[in-house]
Length: 585
Image 1: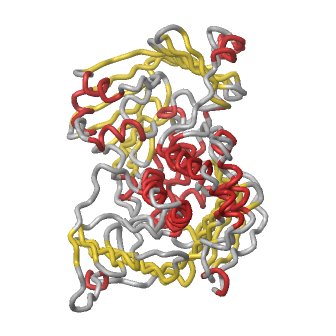
Image 2: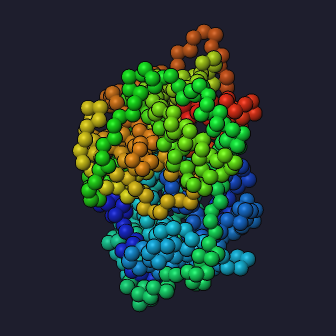
């Protein structure tokens, strides 16, 4: 693709915290078309509206340019909106992460250290939201275009006196399609990229051949006088009122369902029972299995920004569709480290406290080790054999030949339509290993060379651009397992290793070994050889539940609740077995 490497670098390195500008922003959205796209009227659509981030593998959600405070009646609001709506807002940005974004009924900003939001709904309300965040990420942080799109430059453009590039972004096939399916799709996204700054001057979504939404700068001036006025970046009501009215987020969301169940059991004395019992629910497999111990962690990579070469490797990864790859995946999980990462708001809940349970468990739990053998030849042609699972798992393999998908359990086989490669477990995100373009939405540093499993790679440190999410709901849950260190294969661009830390401790480590890249499987290679008399059960896909980590807390809560109905001991067993992958879906 012409000039693609330059475009990748331009979009990734765009830095809104260095800008000094004042602009007027126009946003137009076709609510009827948006309702058609999101399938309004289905439980899945309602969940998507609540779970979906402002932008993700399929780009920004239409309407994300306008910030609105959740009112608890998102469903009614979504179904009541009709026709095409156009709104205007103003944007002021100054160096150091200072910003102000204001429109009808809302204002948000940051003074460089503290962010705030203020809404004119039922009186004035100010919320403190942490450190600097881009006020209009759709335009100011364009690296989201590198995650899930094929980019094509359509020529040059001059907008508001700025030299720009017309770029068409089309959703591309990837082994991560299982994740992408949950995001509401568009046909394509058409943008104008500032040829110098890398930020977007215009962003339009097209769905079913029609304009769905348009966000663009209609005026812009650089180095404005008002950018020198610090008062512009403070709440209209002042910091004193902001701090007085700030709301402390209450734990909520599906992740909280799990915590409430855990805490309920703790209040019945599970902590004391667990401490005094000889029962060890965390398995015998790690005691004699040769590689049970998690490999020793090396110091985190240091250095400057990642090189252009690695950026291109991540975006243009030849492993994106995993054409003909076999490998062995080793996964280690430190259960005690996971418990220790729960925020204080969660650990201190309930009589007896969740923290007491985590402290007890932390004294007794070794790291779990699992092994899976992978054979992958595209987004919907794969086989995953679970060689070693530390628990009571009944799931032995998952196989898909592009038309049908088989889940092979101890006593039966469940068969359904083909679907993209799944997560091997809540801890093992296979798709993320083979399409690492999602990393381009993070801040990457390092790039020192290393060798894993005989393959050369680059070690990178991974950090979020934004402050940590509040300690509640899905965003907090998702952040628990986000890697902060990866090793990128120097030849094909997939991840040889992915590591998530809790302080100095490793929470999750995933490592690919015995990689074979010359494999070219036929559809028959992904069809299981079932013995005569095998019980085969047809199953319908659960279209109303998001895949992967989005649904993991809800599923885990269900497992825990069912076990808790019996007794405390089985509840703990069920909780642990869930993380070992024992609750096959």
